Length: 85
Image 1 (tube, helix red, strand yellow):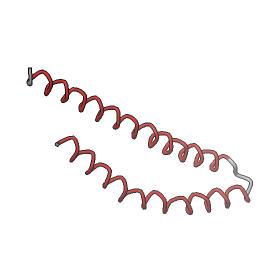
Image 2 (image 1 turned 45 degrees about the vertical axis):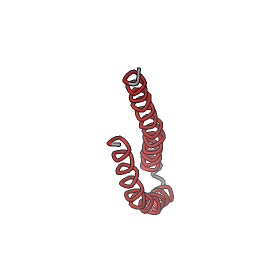
Image 3 (image 1 turned 90 degrees about the horizontal axis):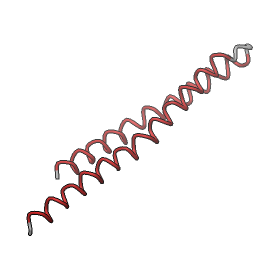
């Protein structure tokens, strides 16, 4: 039950904070657009790398949390089965 509460709390927190990260996309695009029009493409590359970094971390953290939850549930199920014998 504690694991479920932790996952639920984490999910709610991530959903609430997601709106803040989406708001940055328009700012990043405007920055890249103005820098590219001035001939400075290095800043745009750095911002794109940062966006990809945030994307990869998100897509790696969710399966990791699912794996940890599955492993804990499997361990709990084994304990319940051993106590019933």
